Length: 369
Image (cartoon, rainbow, N blue to C red; front, side, top):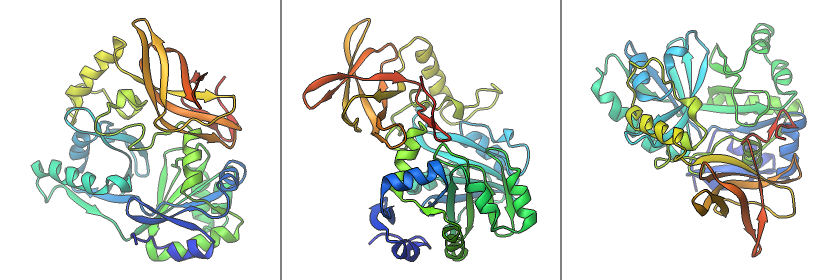
């Protein structure tokens, strides 16, 4: 038996099929992965993501510390409620984790992956060792739950069950913006390629909110559809598209790096500066999107056969699935920067796959040519 979120009983009541996921008992699906996927693309779905790790960083030196810890620059968070996506790198420039950091009225809030919880906390606390504990405090918040509500009707529906003044403020939130409302933090962030909200709240308040959302016709969605949705949106998954051996420049994560000001030193900067030179010279592999419009399904671990100026070479699929929205298979794959004529072995036959920008669906619509 794994750890249970505050919504464990609600999942059972909704007919969820539970699986072990990184030490947690989580719903993989309720009735149908495809139906749950389409509910998010066409209406609204709610995910329990309370297995994610919430870490509050506070104190007079918290900004200085996070500017050193993270590749992105929290100095850009110039007002309460703003958020940014960042890589947290090791000294070799590999990705320890990817995360969201929010500016709070009392400091900063990080939301990191549950699979990397222990190593993340150990790394953060190790790096904080050079700062006075009175000036930087690091507090994990296991008593908090997180609900993600996404889909074209999600924001309107959530607002219908909020106090009118809060609803008006939430309706006006821009992307990567959030607000504090009593015990809750409500933000325009997510992992599906649809508009929506993530609500961080005390765990003992989560079941009542869950039931409110289901009563509004919002469909519960499990990890199965969460994965197909994020892949359609071209979003990375830790342990697949990146890990400690992968440079963010080989994982479409350059937006997580703030190169300016040059005077800011952050962990891994020297290493990824070298990676950047390799990238400019065409020696850094790339993460690309692949489309298979014939029959078959692209799967993680499949070898990609392609050609470069130096001759035949190979890449690998990092994530692949059948796209419920597009009705054919899609994948993310790491290949040499100058790779051409990509093919995949399907049932013993080399089958051409088309390279596209790794962003397949946004707001329910195909976005590649």
